[in-house]
Length: 160
Image 1 (tube, rainbow, N blue to C red):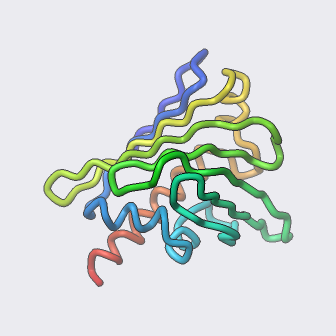
Image 2 (cartoon, rainbow, N blue to C red):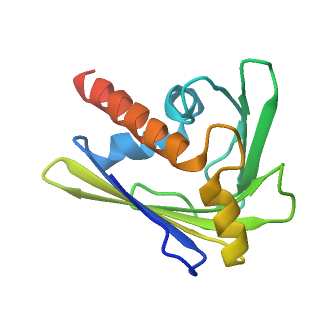
């Protein structure tokens, strides 16, 4: 997996390959019961409060730490999500008003899906807060854990 956050650029790029068809990886992003199984770092529990993957539809989830403290993320979808691409805006309740654009693409070649996520922030400073981690777990730790858990989930779905 690659995570790129070049200094001075309000952008984070994530690239990860999965040994699974893109339809399965896409399902893991758009079905609430599957999202809850992979998204977030170890030690946090995810509740999917809303997930309406259509143009103008909204998504919202809450991560809970071991003390029951909630971390809420939410936003709308732009365009209809498809196995090729999801476009959504994203807001974290600890930083209200800081909205970033998230574009996720799924490219499949011979049963291997390359996921690319491009996250654009309003400012470099907002990107830096994101990179440094808005919670105790840190962003990179959370991204890596989530992608590893997603890999395990889609591997299981391939076998079903």
